[in-house]
Length: 309
Ligand code: SF4
Ligand SMILES: [Zn+2]
Ligand SMILES: [Zn+2]
Image (cartoon, rainbow, N blue to C red; front, side):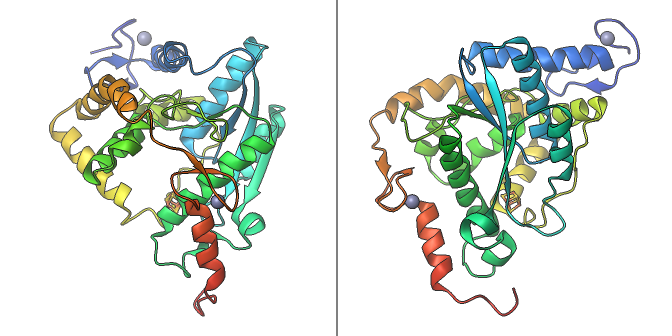
């Protein structure tokens, strides 16, 4: 069977409805869906200065391309690119991203764990009891938020896709952390707080498979290699559960997200009065007196470097 619209050879079958699309129809479908998410959830407003959180991976390249396209048309928004180099050997490589930004006149800001915390993630993970992904997430979120304020950004665009968000929803459910889920959605946060830069997710309703197909067709210089720390992480286990279910029951991922989006306003209402404090050490928003990043940095400094690192 050919493409649903023009009957020529399809390149992809959409998982939730068995619709097959050819290359051109798929590209149109993909971009229309991302731009529809932006307009439906009011992710971008006039005079926004948006930082695109880029890693050199497929999701962030797709967001970078789409928002650059939008910024070129809509002159009243500005975009900058912000990248974090965690210091993960044989994985994090920002060379393609640097070239892409140079060729497209995009302002790129790179911050490394080594410069900001005095040590790469490869060294940090040998000093802590936390899993590398937990430490990586805490420190990366801290840098993204604090550096975005220094750069006068009022939003951060991330490449989170439907698969990522389905994993987030289930992880929070398994851990009994509904308040954390209340902060999810196409635009993050429960209420606006000047200390917290909201994240916007234009790829929210697009699956990982669709994003991979899009960047492959567009020939973006994407690194497809996997982080050596990802196997055995909580997220990778939840990803496996969801993928196994999707295999048996097509549309599972879409069902998780569609029902989550429906209940999200109720969750936000339930937690709307939860207190946001400022960290006593760094001033970043947090739920207790000291933020998780400062706790972690303190912990790292207090321990000698493991001989193996
Ligand atoms: S897989 Fe874990 S350690 Fe690797 S980049 Fe992602 S969060 Fe960081
Ligand atoms: Zn077609
Ligand atoms: Zn702090």
